[in-house]
Image (tube, rainbow, N blue to C red):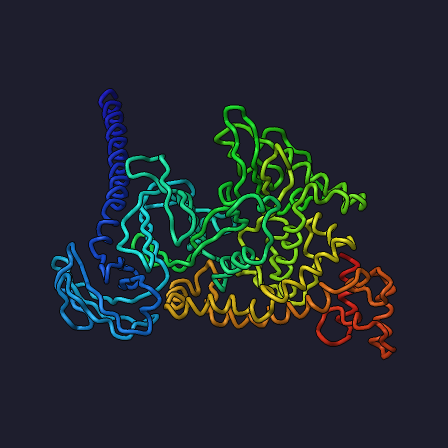
Length: 596
């Protein structure tokens, strides 16, 4: 019995040792992979005309970023390949290290065949060029920050080197376990520290340690967010305090780039600045006296508190209030939160809904009215369904002097006829002629129901229709972005990489076809807004067929008479859905308006 007991104890001990060895080998293998992978990738990097050309191991293609002026011409460049590569040949012509080679007729998607040796192994592939910056990420990343390296090769810059950073996945719906094309937040570090920040400047934008890579994961156009944000930056009036402060940016600037993850091509991204205190030029928090000045909150999900229609009670001391989150000052850093400015604005919106006399008298005390008016026009013009209450940053410049809130949009993928997700097919939700009943943000609703502010919004809309919201200008803005991607070859690479992926519900990715859809959508939608939404006078209400200032059963009865052959004296108000005809569909539309 003693022998058996001793054997069992020894067996259990031996099993534990084996288990520990297996675990150690597993983590050792992972550590070796992290160490070897970047080295293997860098060993195959080419230097073409002073530009870094990393290899995409998925497609065996060296991708090189060069100035746009290179395209359409022959490109003579010195080729360097220090490292383990030998016997390099391009288009069958032997090229020694440091020798010049002429790449004839550079154009997007054109490939130049390459053969080389790495030790005893023969490598075959191709070189191709882009004029987009190339971003290389090396490391193993997940839901929490992990260290890695980032290399950013800009077309007009010299050979780029690795930069130390910590990265994590970001997003909400785009950041679940089944997703493939991930969004990233990057924080650059000094080379000798795991926590000391290192500011970096890219694309002539700001010098900062924090940057974002936005994947456009669910966007079938891939550029909706970037181009729409640029539109906002161009068309929106500056925050109320910007007259006295320079370089206030009430939106995220950025640049479309191509990204490789651990030596594999993962497509086109929007590399952009975050929305933060520095962008908005807010006054700093004073830690010594614990004095709040500038503040930022973000609305990140749909709730009645976020829409400000029926705010719930707030739990003291928490960073989250029913879908609104404190962003600055960071509660994790200062161990304090201050909701006063945000909560006063939310609760005022509810009071103003009950007492409309407060709208004109006091709305401008709590909200930056010119910016809010531009925001309403902006989301209406784009039908930005995901941005009417959520995906809004609210900023207070200095709580000590003025608690007024300005608004900044974020994450504009769901617009221009795009459904909320690739597996949703709801034509009624995204039709160009959909009425604006989907806008539930109470301050904006109250604003548009007041004659004074409504007249201001209509005047501003008409002003913008002459410039940034001119239909052709709007179409060309998105068309130009797609042309850029197609002409540098990035569109074809993106389509090859992600078409039919489960991120897109296995649907085909065709940027050109999606752009045709978007153009038709814009033209129909802007025509609809002109005729039925942003119209002169305060008496016109969509669905008010008889013109009495209300939408009710009387309008349904009048429509029935018209559809049955009666005389139409509605001055065009009978075509409620804007399809050019007066039919039963218009009757249904009025009924829907009444019910909603």
